[in-house]
Image 1 (tube, helix red, strand yellow):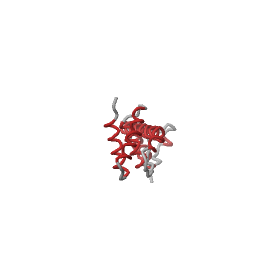
Image 2 (cartoon, helix red, strand yellow):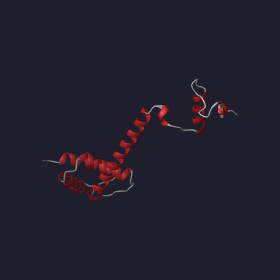
Image 3 (cartoon, helix red, strand yellow):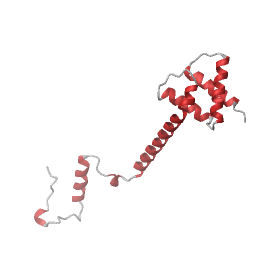
Image 4 (cartoon, helix red, strand yellow):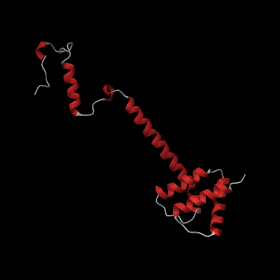
Length: 140
């Protein structure tokens, strides 16, 4: 199995993101390092995600692709955690949007007062304590 084209794409992505100038010898060494990662069952997409994560999120100024070899396991774990966290947050948001307003509960102090006042105006609303206590306690 040949990893040459994938390795070259990853190296070019790395050089573009780090804005480095290199010699053909250095590029050849980098390609061999990436091939090593590919032989160890890392995908091209995982390596590129790792490069982007280290540069964008961790703000590390990399000068060598060897740093990827060292950090890839931890970074992939962090990326997976963030993706799961994002999925859970999206699921929570979808679930909250599907809950009817009457079940969501009180969000403001006055909302509860208004709902109770509406209940009093219903024809079947009678005081449980009798006529003596049948008054609007929300009147101002």
